[in-house]
Image 1 (cartoon, rainbow, N blue to C red):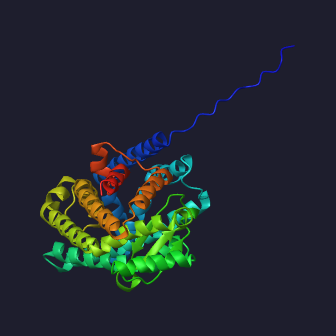
Image 2 (image 1 turned 45 degrees about the horizontal axis):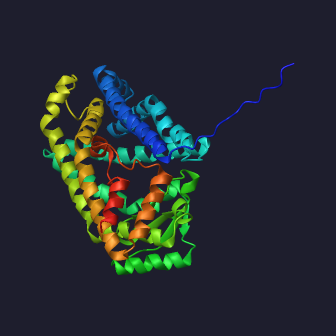
Image 3 (image 1 turned 120 degrees about the vertical axis):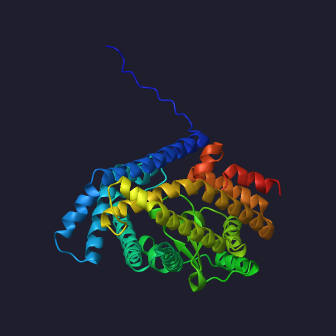
Length: 377
């Protein structure tokens, strides 16, 4: 009788750099797939006549224009979400679990999807209803719509910390009093007024680390993810918040509002000047038709693709300036470098991407560039 054979297993250490590259490359591919797939869905919806059919079907029910818009938008949202669900599920759930970046349960993920969907629908409905009302009442509607959307986005940014973030995270005042006082001292040094410093339970959804300085006016506050607060030294937390405060000191928020305002004005002026040709191509007659709503979405998508590299370039410039000011204020070069090393490992960041990847996808300088910047100081 032959002796039992015992299988032999060899354990191979996983190279963190290779793991980060694999994760990042899959994210890039999924982002590209999502972009082209979303455009294809809108083109099919418009080109097949489904959009016009849906408008005529809903009109036969005798609904008022406002109710008609609500129902039409809801159906379009549901149509897009259901057909895009495989990409959404894989990119935001399966992939994060595959690379051990999340321990979120499937039920909690679905609840977040529901809340995000309802919130996105409400915000979109406000913007779309305002668009149609202004379209019917102003000849230079593109300018009025732009102003309304810009003001609405500023109000939304102000309310995000108190209305939107609590829908997805529980947060409380930071319980580390020593760290809290260091953050307030840093804020005073950089002439930043804070409501308070809070910690959020990011670990329920993601194991990545993050921190933010969010809100406007009296809603300005620091949000520290528990995944960062519990694993990083006080020096490292201080230097990352010095970076966030630097954005405020350098007026990057107001500059971004100005840039985004110009982009919004440019987009709606483009629609104003060219929509007559786009409408004719899809056999539609007017932007006032609900069936032309997907055409607006198509404009947003294509214009967004065109503008993204430029917006990324500006953002990378701002991020570099914020790094420089944070290093100058804290004089914590070693803490900054160790922070970047930890973030790269914990978040599986692509430390040194191909220039084209950086051009299209990176709103921040890659980690290796940020470390080099600190070492050269």
